[in-house]
Length: 86
Image (cartoon, rainbow, N blue to C red; front, top):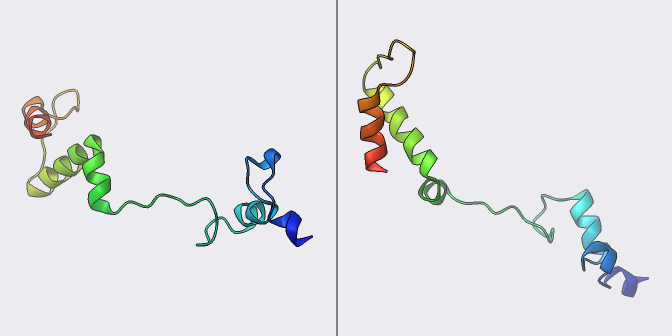
């Protein structure tokens, strides 16, 4: 029985029955064969242009109140300045 639990199965994409048990019943444990890639905040921000833009916009909102256009859009000069930096 122990030999079977350690034998890769083609029906399970090469995972063993023991590995499949861990994937199904304890997916967030450290010994699970499938892990979530966890980036730190700096890596995440550097890899995502939209996050850089959002953070810049949020920092500008913290500086002073923002006056929207008549159609309630963000002002073009502000957005052009933010996009030119990123």
